[in-house]
Amino acid sequence: MLGILYVDDSQLQLDSFRESLASGPYQVWTTTSRREAEDRMVRNRPDLVVIDFNMPDNPGDACLRALKPLSTDNTRFYLYTSDAQAFRRHRDMGFDGVFMLKGKSSVRSQIDAVARALEKFRTG
Image 1 (tube, rainbow, N blue to C red):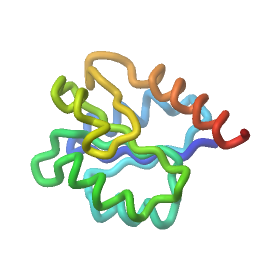
Image 2: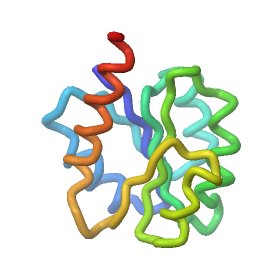
Image 3: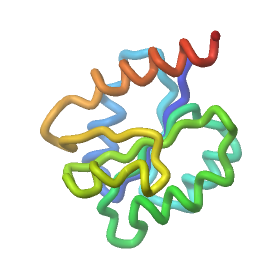
Image 4: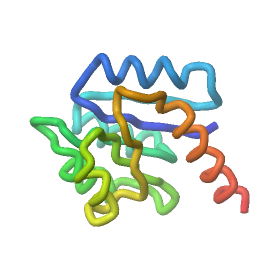
């Protein structure tokens, strides 16, 4: 089972994300708090961390810098944004990938594709 941590300042987005993945083979943790995200990183060791880019009190790139040192070598970090500039710069910021069109398309198909790739990576 793939463990996914999603950090976003919008409870509505968190609920939507969790609901869209509820029927899949995922363990999903969501939070609006960087402190709780740090705790989840240590306690749960998620395989995939999805971070919203536009969080007023916790910008996505700052959140990434806080969480990455707490991750395992196999953890992948994805940016979740509708910001075209952030989309183009996601690798420069240190993200492994990006989910685009936040709120305008289903993230489920994007997560499923990443999950399949991560599973192949884990099983060799």
